[in-house]
Image 1 (cartoon, rainbow, N blue to C red):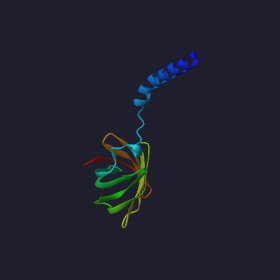
Image 2: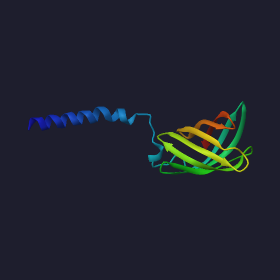
Image 3: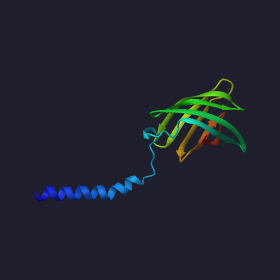
Length: 131
């Protein structure tokens, strides 16, 4: 009978000690976030070799998949394919009729998305803020 009580006390102590640690862990699982911080309209800025190009994302999160569209003066209109979310990490490909595809990786932090992209044998950075 005493061993059951001791086990209960130990279990409660483990929950009390680990609860605050788990609550402050920086990992953010975007795909499980009920508030959906991804879906919506985003102002994006691409930077490549010192040149900045503004554009717009329209994103839609569905579980761990991201779909949507992109548009910039440089690329024209395009669609988003192969969109995935793993934790706070995102990746997708931007496909265009008149421009080479752009492979995008990044992450969500607060109300911003940011990361790197690759196209035409070059690598650049990007940042987006929700409208």
